[in-house]
Every structure is written in C-alpha cells, then in structure tokens.
Length: 325
Length: 148
Ligand code: FES
Image (cartoon, rainbow over all chains, first blue to last red; front, side, top):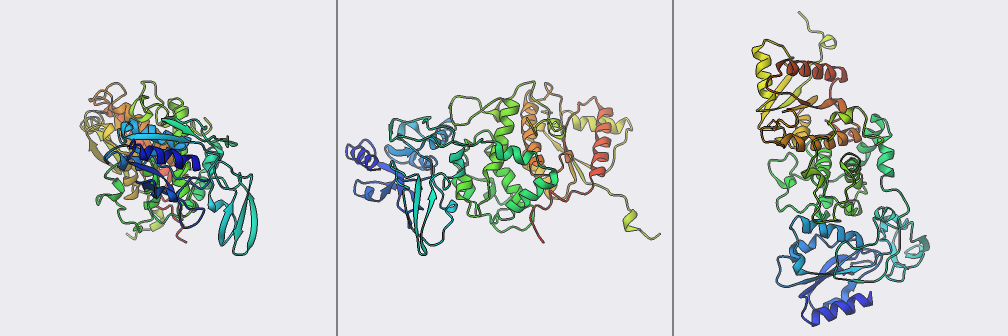
C-alpha cells in the first residue's frame, strides 16, 4: 500500500496528474470507499486493502470531464469495466493514468459471521494472512481469508490487467469454482422451483437502486428507471410486478456489456445474488452467439449489436435447447 | 340465464406486436380472406419487429396479458434490412430469462409472417391462443413477490 501512495505522491508532485482516484478509509476497517484526492497531504487517508472491492472505473466518467489527468487505481477485474467504458466512449483514455494494482481476492464483511466487529487483522495488502483475526465486542474469532472472499473472486477471470500504464503489486490466483455452476444449477430446476427461488430472493428487494448506481455498465445520463413514463419511478412498489420488471430490465440493459465484475451483488444491502441475472445472459450469449467477454477488446463487436443469418430462433427456449447448453 | 362462474370459458388476453410491413398486412389479408382468429388477440402495430423493446413485452404482462407474441418479416425480408435479426437475438435472450425465473416459456413467442401469409397469420394466432388457454391465467408474471 505504501508503494501506491509513494507513486501517487510522485505523480501529483510532478504535475503529471491533477488528482488521484483511489479508496479512503471508511468508518470501519471493512468499509473503505472510493475517493478523489487532490493533494499529497490528502493521501494520508488513502487505503488499499482486502476490503477495497469497489470498482473505480465508473468514477472515471466524471473524471473525464475534469481538467487534466486523473490517476486511477484499477484492479484486474476493474480494468475490464474501464475497457468497456472506453468502447462506449464514456471515459477518456488520454485523461487517465492507470496504475494496475495487484489483487489477492477481495473480502466481504457480510461473509464474516460475527457481530460488533472492532478490527480485522490480516486483510492488508500486499501482506494478507491466510486467516483473518476478527476482534469483536464479544471477543476474538478467526475466519479464513478464502471463506471471507466475495463470490466474484472465487470465479475470478484472471489477474491480468486489460488496460494500464504501469503495474504495482502482485496478485494471487483466487479462482476455485466454475463461474456458471450456480446458473446451471438453477436451470436444472423445475419451473416451480425456479419461480420459488427468485420469488424469495427478489422479495427482499427494497428498490434502493444501489445495483444500478454502482454498475459500471449502467452509465446512461438518463436512466429509464428515473423516467416518469416508466411504471416504477418511485422507489416504493405500487404493484407486485415491479421488482421483476426492474431486475430483468436492469440485467437486460447491460446484456452483452456486463463484464461480470460482480459489483451489483457486492453492494446489495439485501444480499440478493443479482449477478445471477447477468451471468444467465452471459451464459446464453456464449452458447448461442459464441464466447464473448465484455471489456477485453474495445474494438470487438458486441453480441447484441451484431447478428448472423443463422442465429437460433427464439423458439429454442421453449424447446429447451438452452437449458443444458 | 344465470351465469355459472366455474363454467365460464377462460378468455385470455393476448397481445400481438405486428410489424407494419408484413404481419400487420398479413392480419389484414387474413381478414379480407375471411379467415378467422380469436378475438382475444389484441394487435399492436409497430414499425418493425426491432422496435419492440424487451420492456414492451414485460409491460404487456404487467398490464394483464396472458401471452405475448411478436410477428415480424421473415429473416432477410425486413423492410429496414436487418431489424428482425437484432430482434431475434433480443427476444431469444429475453425469453430465456423468463424461463430462467420460472415463468412458463410458452407464454411468449416470435413468429415470422409475411404480408402474403394470411393463412399463416390466422393459424399462428389460433395455435397461440390455444396454447395460452391450456396454460391458463398468467399469475407468475403478474406476481413475483411473496405477499402472504
Ligand atoms: S420491417 Fe418487418 S421486421 Fe423489420
């Protein structure tokens, strides 16, 4: 972490960048938040540890409108989002100095089964422990780093940066499960079971819109969910249909552009596995229209803005052709 | 005559999005050829199948439709050359998502019907309405929340 601060200071002092986009210490050890730093002194609050899961790419949309260059720290998975935003002309590559930071898996406090957490040791970077020591109001407990990791880190796309000017820090491979296993398990359920599963998950939704707000692919200036013409502008639901509408449309709007960064699920205060919707689309796109990973190549043709004459007919769904593909 | 509630036939509400250049004219042809299709089908004319946003489909269900069908020009015949190819990808993904969340997938359909295919139009509508009748009222799409 010190290395990052030293480099950021040097770039600020040389005048090469006007500001730094990074993470700053939150109220607790486990809730650092994205922040802009515009001076070397301000950097005293800078942190980079196992809890810095927040993807900073989306903030670069605002940074692109500011004077001068912005130094941004991107983890490997964040860099996919940045490339995707470049492809959509939402960020300005020229106005970004990107430091690719290493990542050894990011943690979620929700995965630590303890109340009254005071401090957590072992979540640092680059030196993280295999076992986290958690001090709570009620004593000390431990949890393995792996078990406290975000779901998305278990299905990590790899620790290679898709875009960066320089790299600092090393990474550790964290992928240990199949990315589509959960989706496939749901596909194998009966319609009643599927329905019951999503009913129980989506009933938790409080329409806080956090998933939309955090999503780096959701970058429209005007969002359909804020339109007065849409049936659910208000956050409180007036009909029972709204959650479903909201979640299908949210995922659909990023279909073919979602890099599967997992931010939606990370920020959901209700713990809804929102990434399942996105991943279902990714899985279908891969099996129908060929493997596609958004955020790898800014020149590549996106699956929903291209077609082939031989594409499958929508009836393939009713025929069950997609379920086990 | 007293109406027996239980004996009343189920009349589904079916929304058909029809492309102006083909299926809508196909429906016209079906009419002028005196071919019949059930009155449960409510046609909404769209400029091209590609005009149909996935939200239109969901919105129709939200407003009480029991089935939604999209009719467009045959692939390769779109008035705007390629609109229906994009629509095809979108609808495939949307239908697959509906299937994924456990809504019977027979409630949605895409069919390519040209302006000359009055017979196909009437047959398609008849079979779709029959399918929806057999599925019964759409409760799942109307209500995903646990209310009880
Ligand atoms: S004009 Fe009929 S589908 Fe495009």
